[in-house]
Amino acid sequence: MATADVLKDTGYIQNDTELTGPFAAALAKGNLIVQKCNDCAALIMYPKYRCPACFSGSLGWEQVSGAGQLQTFTILRYGPPSTFDVEAPYGIGIVKLDEGPQLMCRLHPGPDGTWDHYVCNQRVSFAPADAAEIAERAAAWFTAA
Amino acid sequence: MSEIWTPPYPEPGSANDAAFIGIGEIPSGVYRERGFMAQIVEASARAIKDAQLSHTDIDQIVLIPCLHGIPDQADLIFSRVAEELGLHGKVKSSVMVHSGGSTSDNATRMAAGLIASGQARNVLVVYSERWGSADLQDMIDMLSVNGIPREWEAPTGLQFNAIGGLITQRYMHQSGSSAEEMAAICVALRDWANLNPNAMYYAKKLTIEKIVNSKMISDPIHAFECPFLADGAGAFVMTSATEAAKKQDAWVRIGGSGGCVSHYAAGQDADLGVLGWVEAAKEAYEAASWGPEDADLGEVYDSYAAVLAIALEGLQISSKGEAAREFHKGRFSPGGEFPLNTNGGLLSAGHTGVGGGTALLIEGIRQLLHRGDDRQVPNARRCIVGGTGGSYMDAQIMMLERATR
Image (cartoon, rainbow over all chains, first blue to last red):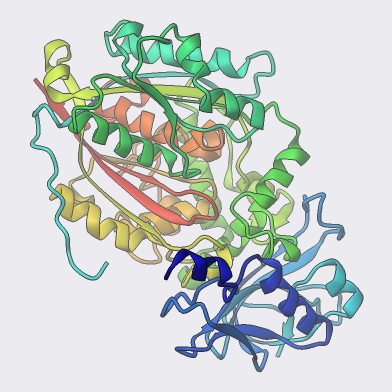
């Protein structure tokens, strides 16, 4: 590719806002999307600048079912980061979606206000937080299925 | 890797066979009166003396980074250590190597490479950390942005004890280990620390009961299962085997090494209960032509009990799922069958940041040089050293061997 072509070339993802923006916008509407490679159809989380499988730079988005398996979880009771304006305790988990990709998420407490009912490998489903919460902290929330 | 590549390791005893010849260390703990640079100079001076060298024999400095603050980090980057040691105008270069908790392994590889390729003669590797004196909330905040993707995982409120909780939960689920068996890991490390005058908890006992009755910090991790942040410093000197043989009766060589970067983001590891140890061990054992059954001891990164248990199983020092139960039965305690983390590890000698892994490496060298005093493993000849950095992003293994003239 000649230098002039490179300078004209904007057909690539130039910053993280192009990745976090669409993801957070979908969450705010109650949808969970993951990145999808337009060339090899790989589903990708967290979203990347190039497809980790085929290295294509042509990447889009795909809505997923929100069903998955809870790989592991924890309830942080002391010492949240001071930049994270939420009072402890809160639940954090890693979910492997049925479609394949994996992501760090927040866990809803049960009706009793605790996270005692969660166990590793259990079925969970995406249960979005409200738009105000997503505007503050763009995380996917899950609950026991 | 798609094909097996057998690296041409240096011939033992040759001019390009790297040799550890000296170590230096000052006590770990909370020492507010001790300055960052003062710690570096003291640890360096002790290592140079232990190596039977003069400070002006050092021609290359390799620095382990600190994490407590940018100004001190900048002093490392911009050769302040060379000047403070009186080595400006004498050393070829002063350079920092950084991969978090596995830095010690990577700094060693780099120093060995410089020696093997004739680029350096006597390399000083040194760390200094002031985590114990730093503001705790500042350190929690720092440990919530370093090694955690700020766009994708920070919005969940993740921090390092939570990563420890996620890994421990997964490990306990897979292995069926009880809270008491997990606590036994911390107790064994404390029993070793009680033999190490440089350990943060040299003088304090710990029991399973005390651990399981302490408050839950990030389930299933209790307060006494979290690493205690410490100030500390340590150093070692490396040269070639031919140089070592001129002055030393014994030195330590690298029989082989292996490594695997399994993830960056904790949420992306294929299995947090396994990590990269299996892959790394395959490579390390093939390179060294010996394995866990031939080792006299191990020094393996242990910032949380489960992180150590997972490493021991990947290293095949323990069988799958049994590491915590083996700790509970005393296998890794003083007097047990397999001496492990004989300085007390990060969990009881003190977590000196990136230096915690370096302290374990220094302890492995100390044991193989037979300078272990009350905790010396009799006739120690082979030691497996394991390191891991960030959110346990990698598994790095050094196969250390005692060599004699």
